[in-house]
Length: 273
Ligand SMILES: [Cu+2]
Image (cartoon, rainbow, N blue to C red; front, side, top):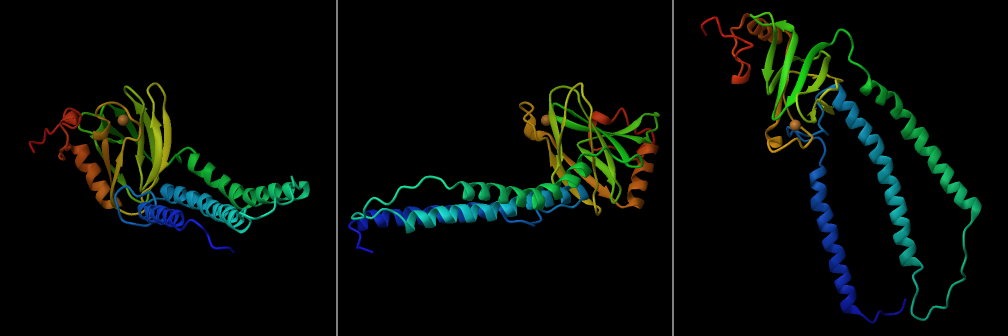
């Protein structure tokens, strides 16, 4: 290798490269996996979120391997066979049909067998209708809050118990969610329990989710739905069976007040509490 004539240019390239590497490193800290933060999809607490995380990993790791091989190959070849100042023009070749067919078909088969096929049953399982014995909740999005109706828990007025912004569910049991909207499109999602599904006016969507353990899980409308979109938060409170039964009984008796004024008329506090 001959000595290069442009040490300043090289130093500049080196600094730029180093800067990009450091930047990538810093940005990548945002991708740190299993951290206990409220909206971390990589730290699932329920079956649906777990399967979605696994699907993501199943797609990501092979993609990462392919990226390293392809980009690494490109960089290696660029450096190894770059033109040097006194080189002759190399022999020009174009195409190699067997090689090109080979490196198209073999990776396709690898991806189909190891990524595509294993994904299919998971996608069907995630997209299936909720089971008939799941605990039903009707979720209604409106500008700018979430309303949760519990058809299985009747309030003192004979109507389903309603919550706003907060959803109590039994942990360990499948929840059947029916999604509706009163106005524009919203999107319901609780990252640590399940990915999003749209709440669309005039259309009913269904989804299922499950919390593995009791706990409190935050969510947020995931579709820009107007000026108050950022306020459209929600909390799912998963309770043990006993706690959930106790909560249901209190709601049914009207002895438990709902932490929101909008639902006061549905859960009348006629017990004098
Ligand atoms: Cu919204």
